Length: 101
Image (cartoon, rainbow, N blue to C red; front, side):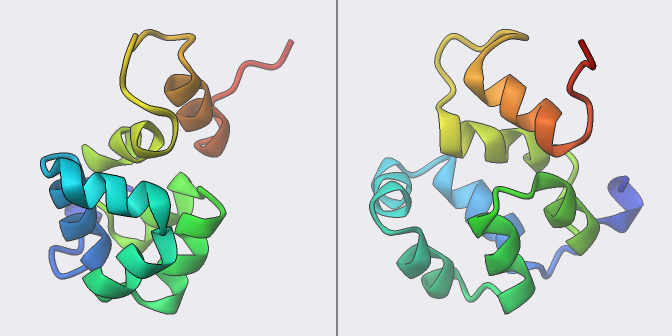
């Protein structure tokens, strides 16, 4: 999952880009993710990955690597960004990076 694996036509890329920049679209996503996914034209594989918050699967489908940690912020918020934030922990968990204690 690198930059070369990015699918520029993948609707999830447009969705992340717009949700991070448009507060109204972001709030609509928070209220009804299914409607948001449909409005952006996501395919069923993408929808399944979003429903499961499966960031790794989204990367394999072609989401831009920069957007992968942004996805965790869409679900868990971006305030107080630090290595132990809810968003950072979600990203680590979904990408198989969670520490083994």
